[in-house]
Length: 68
Image (tube, rainbow, N blue to C red):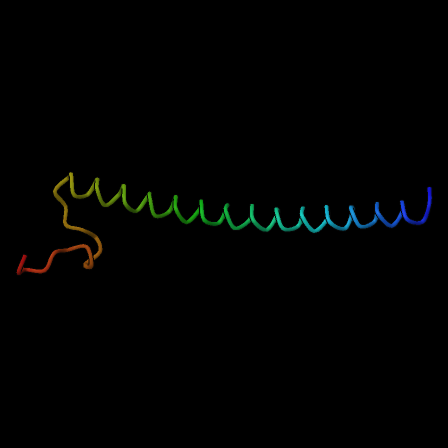
């Protein structure tokens, strides 16, 4: 194997390592986003269930002002 072939393989390996690291970062960010969305969905489901049961919203920001 020539020096050029070895250098080409080293370049390809470096590229693949960088790509794998970038993809790992993307997967981590997407997993965090999924976790946040699940938390948001759970809160929304609890809020809807509470409204269906006739309870007042737990968060005052969800209430409509009296002039509505």
